[in-house]
Length: 304
Image (cartoon, rainbow, N blue to C red; front, side, top):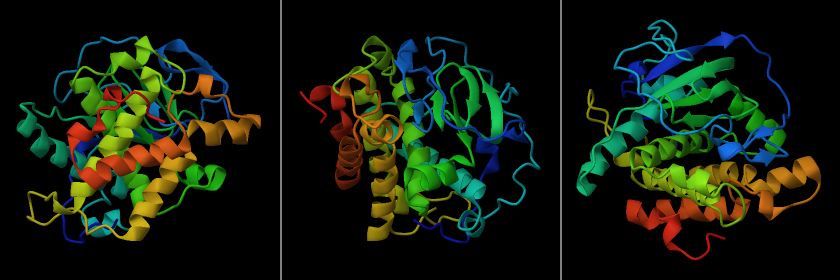
């Protein structure tokens, strides 16, 4: 999904976590949501798998945190939608702008107010309140500092190592998914992942599939979400290819796909994010309905 060339990008919604400071890594073994051990941690995007224990104070507005510096020059090349169409970091910024504008306009219909959420965009490694962020972990939302963390090199890894499409909506979907976690946090839902952290019908899987669905809801409305400065929609109308790109990204990070690739077998009892098929289906649920109410994965007997 391409950006309208003349829309204005708001770089104040994104901070720089540095460029460098860590070489891109391979597979690691670590803790999943709530400390559950996973055989493969790398490349599964979602809630940061290290040290999520809940709580934590939200930083005061404008306060510079570890893992994110407010550097006006860091993204000086990201000015308009035309830049977002050619530069991956600018595309992330434009996606952040669009997703936040959508939820800010949508939530009042449900009696809620969107709380602006910063993204830390970095290359290599940086520190979050939930632990070290790197492309080994993949993009994640940290509820301890209320920020989204994205390594700009992750999209290339997702394409080259996991077979995802390189299309724009494949990347924009990932941003929308992480902001789905931010919305879940604001609605008080993230704790349900910790209470039931593993298995094909677990709370963790339901939280992830809900975030996929919320990303689909945004995609449904994305071409109508306007840039306040120009009055133009951030994004052009979706094409069939755009949807295929998003579904490719969703499928490439299914637990079954990752287990098969890294272990040579599939064990649903270790799932924390859902199967490739389920991730695609719940994204489509949100996209086809455009309705937040259709994303309640806890209201169905089975998400698979």
